[in-house]
Length: 602
Image (cartoon, rainbow, N blue to C red; front, top):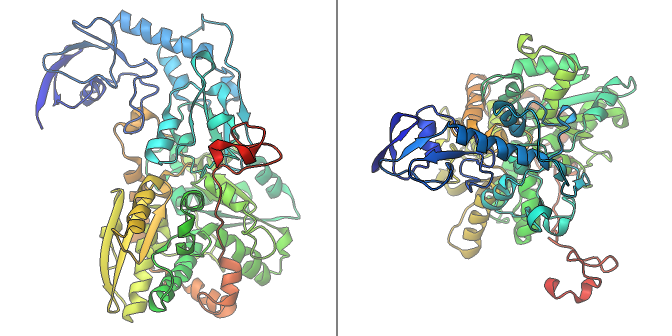
């Protein structure tokens, strides 16, 4: 690529000619502060915090959008630049809820950190503040506009990365807010609750709906038997809450911490991931061999399921009927586990530690009650678990590694672990389906074609004499592309894996938040996925159908995969959802008095 030479703070820099000044500075270790900027998501120069001085230019320029040019001379740290940045941040703070000590992002807030760096000690621009909205009606996401700084990061991750677009700038001027159209609640918008808006937000304008206190109450109730399960991706992110490098695998310390918190049993959702493969794999075999609905599409990601229900109801029959692994685990705990331990399921409280905010809404779905009780009683994100450990004053980094409880539901395989990365569900399924169709064991079980962070991955395999065409998509924008290709007849597949978030669960909306400056240098999707593939390789068992406790579960309780009992407990159904349902009594979402006559909704 053609390069240009410029000077930044007296340092000669040679960079590709399509670089911005911000990128050029970063390449030589000069960190220009940013706030609205987020690599590949929000590059709009809106906040003006990244201003620099360019020799010959009429005024200061936003480095995140200004292209480099040959011979350019730039200063990033003059008094003029420092004063402009400081004044910008002071203006932002003048219309911001500054109750930092009680804020969910205290000490983990990009605005707070920037204010400290710029030595902001007072806010001279006091006056009226924009009217605030507080919305906590959904099961997953809380919106607090008093914290919003109008950076647009949530808007663009929702619109351009996820291709959903339920967030937008509303009103104009001083009255501008960010939220769903017409300020409807997140509970009423066609939101999939993926939480990518939360991880993009630099402040606390968007956050998960916490359930920590309810879990503490259950733990401290002597009449309640509390069982916790952890999703595979949590081990790849939790360490970041305690200062460890991105992608550090902390399985043993995580288990030790959970046991210290007081849970009666600590299990890994990986057991249920193996169970999912047994159910989903045999469902796929049935569809292929008996002329069932194809392509079959995975159903592990609740954000993806909501996306399909809202946008592609014609594909609902293509979805696997399997519940997601943590819901399966909850159903088995309140049936098989309860029976074997002689515990009344009404006295069992199941807690799921998940990397996903959409799991909170999923657990509240009325369909998720295979035993007559809710499969899962509470869902905590990775961030919430981090808070609980800190509340308990546990020195996480000094914990000795411990192991999950091994009875009944404690075994898991490498196939279950890799569920947390994009392509992991597909690879886990192929490890089992291939051996079932071929009738023999394989030593080479790495399916590299479905690994990696390419938006859409495709492969064609010959299994048992059948050509099986597969695809993997991560992020709902990529899911939309795949579905459109299937609809048009351009592509034909037997099996499609879809994850609602780019990178899969490792970058779910409940994972630790990473500052935008760090994201310029690190691909979190890659680093966290490494931890899961590492654990897969060190485990003795790497195929779901080889899990001895899964085999025993079928022998003693379920019978066989896809049995009647398995369907009652482990399978579900889906519902087409209207994006903007009309309420004839209350009027339509546009605010018109008579929804039935609203031209916008006909």
